[in-house]
Length: 369
Ligand SMILES: *Cc1c(COP(=O)(O)O)cnc(C)c1O
Image 1 (cartoon, rainbow, N blue to C red):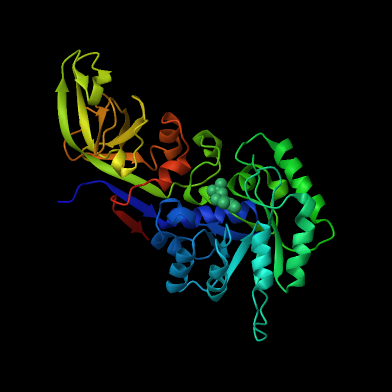
Image 2: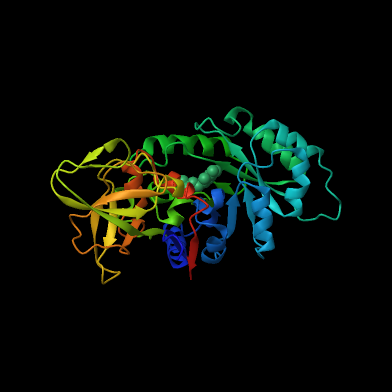
């Protein structure tokens, strides 16, 4: 038998979450953001589950090629553009739209000799820095770049990325950035793209023509707090499950794992679960991080049990006092339906994004249709 850890990827949940995006942004087109191997979920699942998106946004040319090889003929957006002039031709051969955020990219595009028979204009998303201070042109030279690209026969859309949309009650800041964006593009009519998941969920005055949801498609929270999406009707897509592979009966005072961080307050059983930091479970998870243990005789019923002791490379240990029926072979959900990935992340001092993206390649994935 294989080691029991498995990540199930629920394509129904992907479809549901995409529908939620469309309900929240009914007039916008949707770039489904699938960078970082679809936030750790794998391309196979999203090509199926997000097939009704209007386009896919990602980072690497190789991934764009993979999408084309899988038959995707719709739009692809390269979120950081290309990294060298030689990649430009390749990107256009794959019919990708490009983000442009530096002057050197503008010059490379001007220098590219567009063949006369190429009647379809090349699509550019010109990125404005509205305060994130990561990528993009400042408002002071944004318009000049727009006109240069326009003069070179590109079709240009306006784009920005908000620094604070991931905070639920930060409207003044998102509003101010959106105002700056709108003031800068005033009078230059073109499509706009501004909204990540946080904007779609919490700041819908700033949606633009093409939204760019990532994390909400996977059913996790832009803020890193599950409570913030508990009523947003999103479904978790990744279910990371394993099994109990060993049980220890501790006496009062016995210690658990490396360093003996946890000490049994009374006689108790602990379960050893096949899942550790080499699988992507965070080593920083403290005692008390929730896992869900199914009843021995049912998949549907179960209880939350807390982790105890240091997470190790291949295993973690859980307090079974809530689960007297648990035995070797009992199903354990590390995150998914019963344990939101955001809750595990919050305990471990990070956000769901990081845990999903860091799912280790050694964990087998099963795509559920
Ligand atoms: C990653 C990314 C997104 C998606 O962000 P989420 O918070 O996951 O919705 C949108 N736009 C850009 C430019 C990105 O890099």
